[in-house]
Image (cartoon, rainbow, N blue to C red; front, side):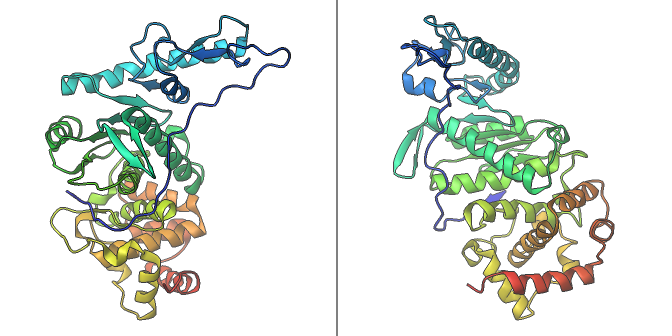
Length: 382
């Protein structure tokens, strides 16, 4: 089970990103398409079509015979071979994406609102949500969150030293439900475990199902951060060799630490925890890990590194979650690529002591000494 703390949040992202048209051709302008080579499908509203283009599949236009489910058609008033080729590629991507997404419909026994981007599949069953000062509908939110997930993917890959797409066993599938009963049913069908809040299936077939009504999630900002934390877990566990190290003694610090790292990177705070029985972690230091860790280091009131690196996810305390974040923060500052290699070794069930020695040339005592000095030199006091 996962915790949903309710604290003040930082707004990240205020609207869906519209598709960018290709570069217009030189020469006389086509009045119909402004020389981009395509126009919006007349079977849909213009604002619906404006969001199509970057995604591989969108259920809001998928059944349209006029545009073949991509939201745009070839302009009949001009010739633009590059635009025609782009439309063909989009139709081909849609055809490849559709069968897997329709399996979700079959499992839930009804058509679902869903989409697929380059690296993610997303089922979106919320009618609307306020983003910034504007309330967005389900279609705009589907595209917004696919865009946000792609940004998470970009930062993840860059941070860990250029992870190759082939390292991931499959695209993560994320399910966002409004009705608690849908969440209970879907988590059992897609993640093999039924739960009321959030449930993950780790490893080579990564999936995350969650209920996001106001009983559990109180804002777009909280949903955004909560999703990023859990999807980071999915990606780290699905990298080859695919395995969830959070269940291994010696792996939770890296797995949980990286998920917190992404929260802090994007939002400035971390307040999402993965646990089953403890409620002691709610709102730890308002999610402001860096000053909290610096204070612990300065006062020499820290959990021993050997203890933290022996934990499984469910047994990490509040302080140990923060310290695990800081371990990962320090190692990434040295080399994100090397930290990624630590992850590979831990997924092969290597002990942290040996992994640290082989990758960074440090034993736990040396690591702890250098980490403490780095925290005092770089973390703010408030």
